[in-house]
Image 1: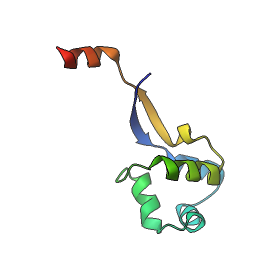
Image 2: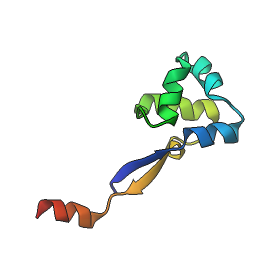
Image 3: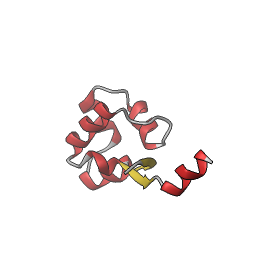
Image 4: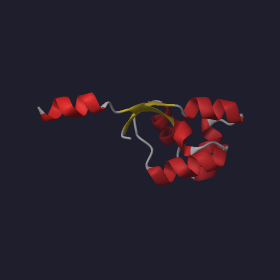
Length: 80
């Protein structure tokens, strides 16, 4: 099945884990602004970074974004 990325859920996952964006940035050797850019959807996390973030905060990589199923009807509509 094909998906589109919805809203970034990183902030929710950080809250659940009891960690802060600053903690995550320090752990992964990023500037805090980069983590905030992910949270605010100014940047999309590359897969390698998403895997590292998920591992650091103890969640599944799929839990970092809303995943919206791409409707087959929309695909057919584009072909016509």
